[in-house]
Image 1 (cartoon, rainbow, N blue to C red):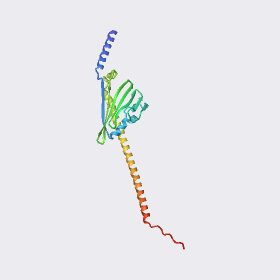
Image 2 (cartoon, rainbow, N blue to C red):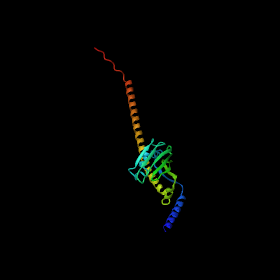
Image 3 (cartoon, rainbow, N blue to C red):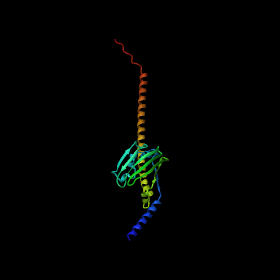
Image 4 (cartoon, helix red, strand yellow):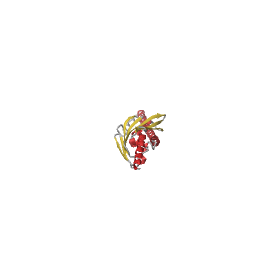
Length: 224
């Protein structure tokens, strides 16, 4: 009896392994959103890993997550390594290529809960006075990942996180754009005030010089 049970178990596992083997070897998750800010603002928030804390959908999963940043922020070669709880695991992101205000390529490496390497791409396309942001993650499914797809829809699961992240990114980018506009307006007003003050000073100096030139010199009085 035990032999029959063991044989049935082996057969079941073999069938399951065969089914898992037929699952797609590669995957791609893509989501887009339109953000109320120009491309250069959104590009900056994505390219600088230190800004991810304000919009990444995974940051709130572990407030005590350990983070390590390397390289020059926003430049090729800059890194962001993290180590956290079971929900965020451990891994590292590295900027491997970028096209200013239009595209960023990131190498995404997961260490825990299981190792994997993925390609992440952010694209920024002008849409009037706004920006359409496209977030793409692509990679290869190992046996474990293939098995997981039997019980969960990876596109929906990861895509839902992308949607949340893009929504937060939009809020942050809009606020950052507003701050930059306000700073530019304040700077322009200060510069205009400085120019007006300088012009007023020049006019006053010119008037005083003209008045001095028009005033005849005083005649010295003779001593008696």
